[in-house]
Length: 142
Image (tube, rainbow, N blue to C red; front, side, top):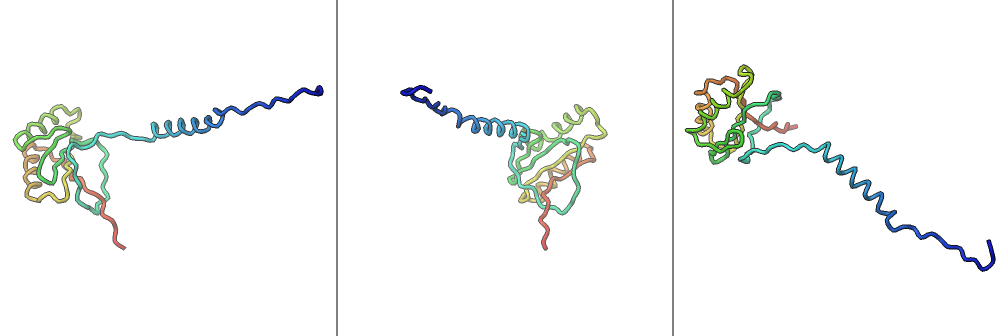
């Protein structure tokens, strides 16, 4: 090194501190893309009644939702009582495996039992025997 020569220090790039942050953001993006599960929500929000049953359903059923005010939805369409039976029959006819066809009824826990009985009687008219009622698992009391 010569006398009078100055040593130039390399300034650290200000962008170097952003690289770890960008890496973390991309890792989080990939995690949420893989781990996230987007499912279609019910057209009517209901709070199912409690149950202590451990039975779990495996097959994809035809979903009928009944709100606390008695409004009925089949799949994503809100229907009245007169249109419920034809809609069930239409779905049954379109089913690939009629032997495994079943209906899942989701009702609000505060729905009057008379209204539930009326909806179930309409379902019974279709002749479909595999009908389930969605419930929440009841918390165990210790």
